[in-house]
Structures are given as C-alpha cells and as structure tokens.
Length: 272
Image (cartoon, rainbow, N blue to C red):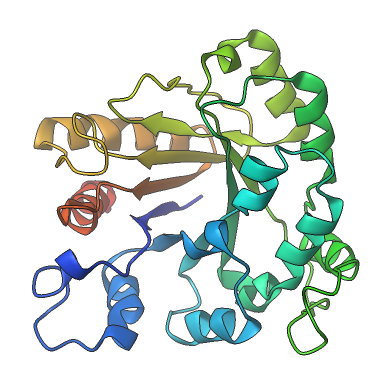
C-alpha cells in the first residue's frame, strides 16, 4: 500500500517563480513535480487524445515509482454520456496510455453535474472498462481511423492491473445502490472536496482510495489550512490501514496553492 499524493495538472503560469524555481525551463516542470511529489493527475487526457510520443516523454521524465492518474475522455463522459462508447474507449486506450508501463496509475472518470444516477447505463459502462493492461491492449486494437498506424499503441509486454475511479456530481448518487454497484465492480468512488454542492462520498469500494481536493472554501483557489491537512492525513492513514492504496490530488491550482498543499500533506504522511 502506498500514498500517491500529487496535483491535477502541472503546466500553470502562476507556479513559475514560486513552486517552479526561476529559470526552470518549461519542459522540465514535470521532472520537478516528480522530484517533490509521488503522483500527478493528467488533465490533458480528459480534453483530447494524446500522442504516443507524449506518454513516452512523460515516462522518461519521471522515476519508475512515480504514478500517473489519467482523466478519462470527456467525449465518453460528457458528450456520449457513457452510451455507445466502445470505439471511444478503444481510441483512448490506443492513444499511448500503455506506454506509461509501471507508471500507469488509476483512470478517473468524471461525470458532469447534470448526469443523474442511472444504474443500467453506469453498470454497462463500468463493465466495459479493462481491468488489466492486456485487456486494455485488446480493447485498443479495436480503435477506429482517428488513430492511424503511427498513432495507435495496441500491445503491452506486461500484464498489470488497471484501477478505475469515478467522480460524480449529481445528488442522486447518494443512493445505496450506487455504493453496492461500485463494490461489485471494484471501482473507487472519488471523495470530492469542493465548496459546490456536489455529493461527498466515502465509499470503500475498491483496493484504492481516491480523493480530488478542489479547494475547500473557494473552488480551484483556496489554500488548505494546517488543521484541514491534519484531518486529511488522518483520513489517508485510515484508508491505508484498511489496505488501500491512497490517491489524493490537489486541484486548487489557480493561485498556486496545489503543489504546496500536496507537499504539506505528503510530509504529514512520511514515516517519522
């Protein structure tokens, strides 16, 4: 069991000259993040399909024990709304995801606040998700022409587990059936911390625990207090004692607090 504490994205101008030292070239920012934290959540995979060369570069810039949590495609979650997504999923996993190898962490799927709980739609979607890299490679082989031969990665040399997490924002997900469905399908329910009225769910449904901290009082902006981070550290230790790998990603990035808060939480979790 490990603590994966990091930030959601790393390319922010407000971090330069602060978390990033003056003079650090932009192409070395990920390397700097990896020297200070243990994981990162990738935003780019949410907005568009990346290239294999991008995943290769990320792997080259980070140590083997660093973890990349990837945000699943918004085309799947926001446009298709989880229906008829087989080809879109194939394209996502063929885009180069498998090139991260041992650095590949969970895939987090974020549903919009307008999407209510539909157990049938959700169950079908979650059952489609690959649970190992070999399953992901077989799914990737079904990609369409959006990915030409030079852009598709459909093979892997190792077979490793792939974990999935789901962030929901509609109040109907507080239904008890949702928690049971996550447990049955071994999917982590994301703890979402934000000032918006999104449901806060602590669902021990998977071998991982996953939290996204968007800013407790101001969305994407507010700094976490020492008292708040003490409480988060205690929560993380509890998840760890339950036998779960712990993933916490700070998304309060607009004023530059995210990397510092992640470091402060990680320091609280280091062995004394």
